Image 1 (cartoon, rainbow, N blue to C red):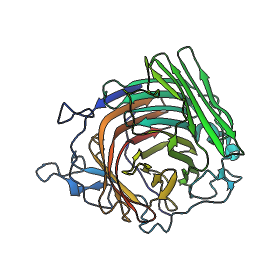
Image 2: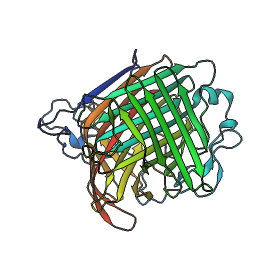
Image 3: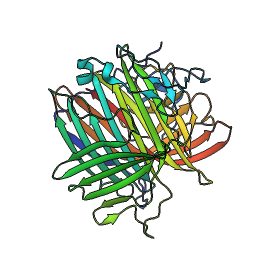
Image 4: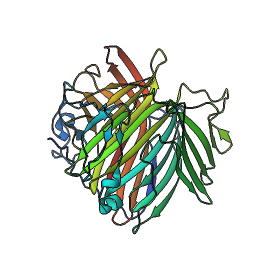
Amino acid sequence: MTEQQETTVVAPSTTTATTIESIPSSSSSSSVVVVPVDEAASSSNNTTDKGNHNKECVNQDASCEHYVKKYTPYLDIELKNQVEIIDQDDLLDNEGKLKKGGWARQPCLNYNPSSLTSFRKGYRLKEWNYYGFVTDKFYLAVAVANLGYVNNYQTFFIEFDKPNNIIKDDVINTSFVTKGMQLPADSSAPGVHIDYTSKKFSLKFEVTNNGNGNDIKHNIKIKSKKMKLDADITLDLSPNRESIVLVTPIGKENFYYNRKVNLIPVVAGSKLQVGDTDYLAESPDRQYNFTYGLMDWGRGCWDYSSFWLWSSAWGVTADGRPVGLNLGAGFGNLTTHTENCVNIDGRIHKLGQVDIKYNPKDTAKPWLFECKHGRFGGNPVVFTPFIKKVESNNFGIISSSFDQIMGNFKGDIILDDGEVISVDLYGFSEVHFARW
């Protein structure tokens, strides 16, 4: 079994900080600032790729900023090891170990953390619910995370044409003695999933399940005095829409059970008010090419030192069909699956190995995504950043470094039936290091 390893160590910060960077453009008249695309790096099985090294540079080692970091998952060019899980089962056995690895279109495994030891449940188990609301003009995200020692509630709002005016609010509660919040074991179980209220900040996530399970709505309410934010948004997550569900072993004992969905329809009547503006109200001044939701639902026992890359993108095809990408790497045993896929109007087209190339010294430089089995038409999909959000946190035994970079994804994609589509999408890429 091949285990992907990450050995980069990030020094812990001494404070909690958020930095927002707008990427300088070559033209001040552009409504969305961009950086020029670097030349493509050549393929390599190494984590540092010398194919993109500047020949005029005097530094000939991996510390040179011209080197591009590359993460290559388990080699599966023919997708023979993309194990699709279709049968209902428990996630963990009686000893708290993962029963199987693979991917699914729907969450068919029963998340049963009761079989974990008290220590693993209290300090190794990490759980989160994350929602995003996206158009071609803005991005709103809200997350709730139970990290065992720490609970975190967070939201932020970005307008793409106002990169220096990003607003954010979060609440962090430490809990070193007792387990924190209890999150549901099913991403679409009916009922209230989160209900947090303080004087200045409140969140409520609630799921309704009508029509014998065929009509599932996720309602997200957010209020923040700091952000002057009042949101009441409902997503239609009915099961006719497919997800990318991951069942990933991490080392000998740990695991990650994850459901990611993008292109989720936003129900009419939803509200997103920031200041005096309701960004979801009909107005001739606000015309969007699309409006979607996305969800990242995660449950798992992680290694104390962890790392991941995650990219998500959304938009429409030339003929008006919703199209999205989900790409990722960086952790776990990927001999049974990857999380890479294309979403066309709620249907998953599975991808195998995708090499991710980026500059770890400057994550705002262009990224390259290379599909080894030709599903990107022989050329990489290029991610060109225009806004970078950086966070660092240190709570003693817990610390993290987190870059979330917004930008555009461009390239060609070949679908399961051989159709070739050219995409020009909005989206983000994450680089996350954690000691937790």
